[in-house]
Image (cartoon, rainbow, N blue to C red; front, side):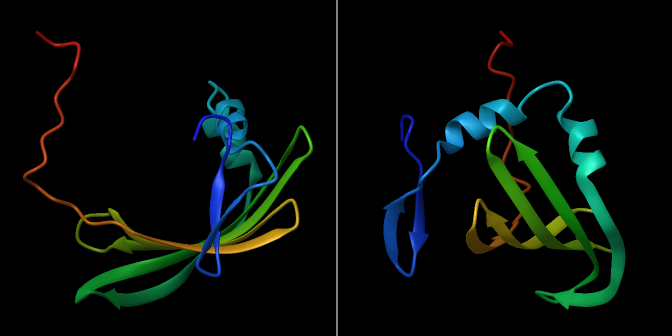
Length: 121
């Protein structure tokens, strides 16, 4: 919200000690894809799994980012659909300047959603 960022810790929302908006802004530059690729290590296939009844392949990789007194290290597991190659779940265990966190993202695909170009007439 504005320049403030919040995180839910043990059921309570608290202000983060750093400006995540600024962090995201610094990451969003033309070198981002190459920078991310350069900072990924130990990428490997963990093996097959089933997620919500669908066959998946699970991958794991480590990521490290350091810039402007921001230090991020993460280990990510990513579930990718065997039949369509789409990501369905990721579990990220990380450390942001000494703050430990675990984030689970579940992705659902709704074929009825149509995204239109807002500049098209």
